Amino acid sequence: QLFHESFNNSYWIIVHHHQVMSVFDQQANSESTIGCFGCCVRPEDSYHDVRKQHHSQNKLSREDERKKKEVDASLSEAFNGLTFEERQRQEEVLHGVDDKIAEEAVFINSALQELDNHLLRIKRGSAYEIAERMDPEYVSARAFRVMFLRGNEYNAKKSASQMLRFFEMKQKLFGVEKLVKDITLDDLDEDDQASLNTGWLQVHGKDRSGRVIYLQFPGLRAFKDLKNELRARFYFMMELLKSEETQLKGIVTVLYGVEQFKDSTNGMGHLETVQVALAIPVYTAGYHTCCSDVREYALFNLIVKLIPAKLVARNRIHLGSHLECEYRLSSFGISRLPINKIKNVTSYPGGDEACHNSSSSMTIEPNGNDVLFTSNRTSNNPGNHYLRNLVLELWQVYDSGPSDTKRVIVDGIVEKIHSNGGRFLTNSGALQPYWVESPIEEVRTKVAQMFRNQKRAWKRASSLQNKVIDGTPITGDPLPYDVILGKSQNTRGKELLQHLIKERSEEYDALDRGTKATIVVAVVETIKGKGGRFLQPASDSSGLRIGY
Image (cartoon, rainbow, N blue to C red; front, side, top):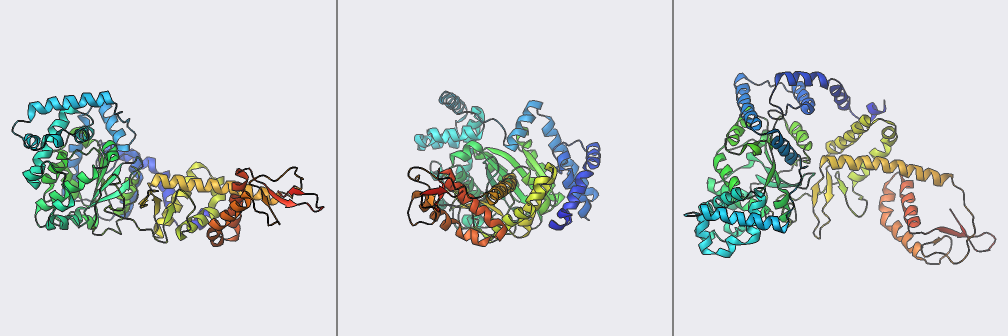
């Protein structure tokens, strides 16, 4: 009954679907052999398929079914061409749980020597050789070469081949004179920058494994000439690689062509786009294609034929609505996309904070409905107050329920924040702070922790209310962090108390009477944590006594 009163009926539907999930799993397993490809037909995704079947009135035509099966077959063929160990390895990479290679000096030096040997054998007549003659120091710079090794998982042969493709592409897009110079924004002409300003290439913070989320919105593509877009893409990706962390951890690409973001150019330039991507030494740890049209889904078949099988294993296609695609992305640690706030951009990633600093392509401005997670203090944003009130309202139900019930409550609260127009944002803590959306699993963890904190605060408040004045006389002088009540004597403890009251007064005033006690308890515990006590003059003037 409490659930029914606290949440709308959609949460009852979720429970109902999970109860019958096994029936649909059996049906899905009997009809599909594609495994983790196709329309996310893995058992754990069956609930989403059920929702889509339940709500969608648009069944696939025979032609669309045929196209989808062709793509699924290509994916399955590429996936089955890998050994079991390699498939397992690529699954771990996709989910960000793979073991990273330690960059020990001996290992790197050996890889660099092997890279030099491969380049000597294949460089003749290439743009690489031209660049080497123009500026040997630029081409042989250790950091530059290590970047290619990282992008190719330290495979020296593949790194050498990519270095040749890199300089060939750079020469093709920018001319010989730019071969040994880093491409900057000034190197993009007016039409290049206009293509970039459409906002079709953006950065969306990081996933739960700390990897940059590289967003592409095909529906925002616009260019005077395809070369303008290719030059803009080359610049954008090389700016990302200025961050050593991005080189080491890689990126997760999300090609988002759902509904209004469907490719506005009907796939123009896909082959050239892939060629540019293969020339850039960026380590792509995962690739997600989101679409709501089977015809868009079928375009992925072209990409499958152009990339190595193990990279295909890191790809996932999500076919459905905005809600369905975002929910599936969240299972890979990708936080909710700001699809309702996408707009043209005028700044680009760059520097060591290339992912999302003040020069990021997507700056998030918090609003009143957002929940703000800060590292140093509790936020007084209205969205935070709303979240705290929800936790206060439901903590007893949460505390008494089994783990499944607790998960439903947490998900319900997250959805309420989202439906209220709010997001869960985390402060970077940098010198020039910026806000990024928190991964969904991190949000769930924080909300669950709030319920546990509420229980502890309730216990502390109850114990304080039940205690009487101790009245134990003390001997000697008060301790530095003691707070002497009823006297004007200043101590470190009293100064700390005044500071804490001032710091949390706004938060205290904004809470209702039932939750104000939690602030009081927190302040008292802070004083006691410093070794302080709350003292008051003894009634018989014999000295000081412990108040409580």
